[in-house]
Amino acid sequence: MVGHTHEDVDQFFSRISVKCHQQAAVTLPDLHQLISTSVKPMPYIEHITSLWDFRKLSTSDYSLCDFKDIHHFVFSKADDKVSLKFKNWPLHSEPYSELDVTDVIPDLEVPSIVEGMPPKFRSVVTNMSGDLEKWMSTGRFIHQHLDWWKDYLETFSQRKARPNVPLPTNFQKYKNPKKQTPTLESNITDLIDKHLKKMSEEISDSPRKEKTLSNVTHD
Image (cartoon, rainbow, N blue to C red):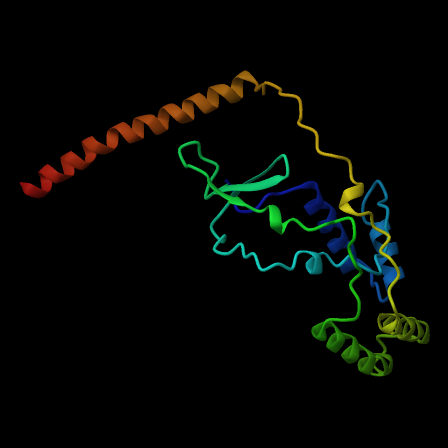
């Protein structure tokens, strides 16, 4: 199991990063325009102005602690019981541990909206509001940018509307995929077999090498 997986989204964000080095984006509309021209086909861009408060829903006295070394999880539901099976690595030789997490599952039908600002974020907004005139005086802003940022920062003190993103309960239900027999090209299977044979030979040679070294040491 690798420590970092590379997906298509990595390439997507790298193109945005390259574009940001070539073109300034002072306001969010500028950034949206930059993103739309950084990759093809042109992506759909929408600014999310509010969030569902899932942290509040998941607040519980139940603690899932000491999971820092766990890499393999299996959630399952039987009747009204939800169980979590887990182990360090996805190895057949390693047994599962199991927990009953039925009482931890939140009701996703009735989430609330994140209201107000966390103290750290409020500090960022306050500092930015105080720096606007400084950025204007140093030439980083023009009056159009200054007006936009004043209006935008003011929106954080207003009551948020319902998020424009769907709830998880509106997503399509998970369906077990059809079982397919994986197929590999013959050259790939040959390389795998060669690699396995080499590893097997190295393992079988190890005891002989250790024995030889031991004899040399005693002599």
